[in-house]
Image (tube, rainbow, N blue to C red; front, side):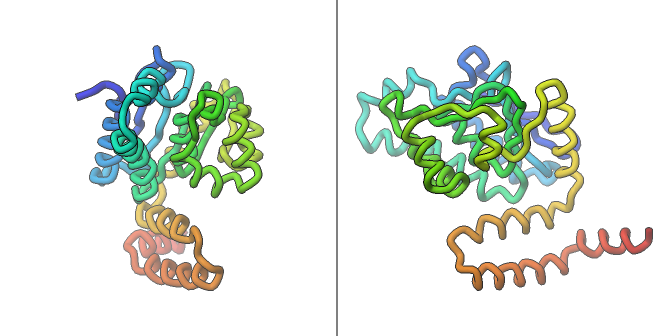
Amino acid sequence: MTDRVLATVDSGILTATLNRPDKKNAIDAPMIDALLAVLERADLDAAVRVVALRGAGGDFCAGMDLHELLASADKSVDENRRAALRFAEIFLSMRRLPKPVVALVRGRALAGGCGLATACDLVLAAESAQFGYPEVQRGFVPAIVMTLLKRTAGEKIAFDLAATGRILGAPEAAGLGLVSRVYEDSDFDDQVGEVLRALAAASPSALALTKQQFYQLDGMRFEEGVRLGADVNAVSRTTPDFRAALQAFLKK
């Protein structure tokens, strides 16, 4: 057991809190294992409708544990590849999970921590939050997040962020597509609470189909995407949630 990630469930919302505030929630091997366990729990527990990822203390996550990274310099390429794939599995698990994953970002989300936020379906940020990929400044590469970053921000912006490591404020990050919504620090918790409750109250089947289709569209031709939409449209009409929601609306 580890306390690297604290998990609580309330009213359909599983809140996963990165719990190394003294290390700015730096990611190490035990935290990676704990995050994967939390995502598996969210997948298997029907009571969980949405996952919220946040950091303990003043920061979301400042990136990978630098002491652990330095130790990896003495390991073989194969050993380091296994460790990297273990971290990458978090990104894949978030994408496969048929429930929304929402990053709640206060303070710094840097390097691997910014990657974790980018991997979430929604990123809700306090106005004072900071985002960036400063790996190159440490002789490293934001390699695992590169696929997500390029798709999210576009080619020129993504290369700028990866090659220069410059740090963005939340408003600029939102303008570049890395952040979904920005809220004032003073009412951040209230605002994100409303978003999470709305997601938890929504139809689980409709959200699952929406998320699945959304990411399946990556790389599809226009015609293929429209046909996929028709398939999803047809399936969604057969769900109990669809029938119940329409009947309730028509009775108003």
